[in-house]
Amino acid sequence: MLPILVQRLRFRFRTAGPLNPWMGPAVRGAVAKLWKDAVCQHPHAFRETQWTYCKGCPHQASCSYGMLMEPDPPAGVTVFTGQDDAIRPMVICPQYPLPSDARIGDFWQVRVTLIGQRAIAQAAEVPRWLEAAGRDPQRGLGPERIGFDLVDRDEHRTRMELPLRISDRVGVWPHLRVRLMTPLILRQTIDGKTRPILQPRFEDLLKASLRSVGRLHALYGTALPDATFAELKAAAASIVTRHAEFHERWQYQHSNRRQLGAQIRWISGWATYAQVPAALAEWLMWGGLLHSGTNRISGNGGWLVDASDSPAALPNDWHSPWPELAPLTDFGQANSVATQPPTSLHPPDDFASRNHRRHGRFALHTTRNRHSLGSPTTLAKSPDTKKPAWNPQRRESQAGE
Image (cartoon, rainbow, N blue to C red):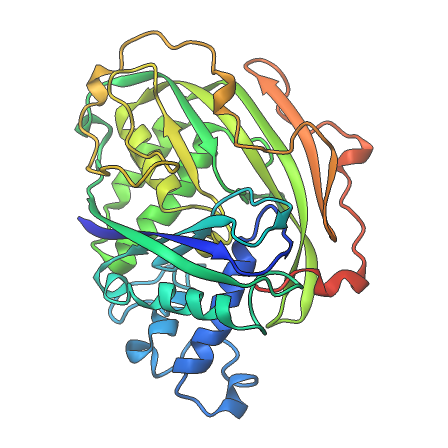
């Protein structure tokens, strides 16, 4: 079993200014610089040259920043090809979407998830450095360096125990809904070219969950049998999409460390899948709670699994105080007939009714995309689907990495 600690941090804005709807990388960047400068044991001159990144640093074992933000694989752990960079045992996830403008006195939240005993031992670090970043006039959020104060926090501890075989859980969910709660970035390689997945099938989400949750177990717990992954992938390939509504989006992002900016492409939305075995549903739930896909440390790739048509509800609500996250064992009750997904399943204020919406000096580009069972799932070609032109003069439009 892999121990997990979730912290819910509540902040209040001290100053006002424009915000992007998704500030995950900005929040991570705001805390990272202060934290690293305070604890790095290398001379300052080498931090911007030889040790810009922490990979291979001899002080990793005693450095809270390196351990959580840029870890090397633990000693003695087998690392497979393509996994030289260890998956982070932490996620810093601000609420999404944020309002277009921060107003003094308004509240907002950040959820910090720590996985494994070593990460949990550093539980005080992220709240400490987030609070420091909010009070530092040279940090804060966005180009206006929006300040904020830590108001309160609560914690929830649980342990993750996953089924290793389909037969380990009894029952099938007739209709299982997945709601993306933060931007999701998934990619696949086709004919040697890497392409984004804009309409994820169940097996795409399940594979992303297997990669993140499986690697977390391998590095910070006990490695799971290879046969588990093969069986789960084979079962996921037969799951049918009943209805889906995903939206493609673009948002400008700037990296202070690399001094580079780019338009980042992601998706948001929801889907309903039919006849999902209980074991697959449980893996998918943990993949969303611990985040999956690209840039998960900044909160990308979080989703909720919803089976509200069954008396055995999944305990993964993000909007109320953290519920019990005990391993799910009651999937066998999922035998009732599902109804059409209600409108409440749409991501909150997802901006999808517009192709373009401005947020102060920021631009959010969206493309609406619907499909249902039997209809095409590829992105229709239209002027709205083109990548927005990048203006180098906007390089300073968002702080953080």
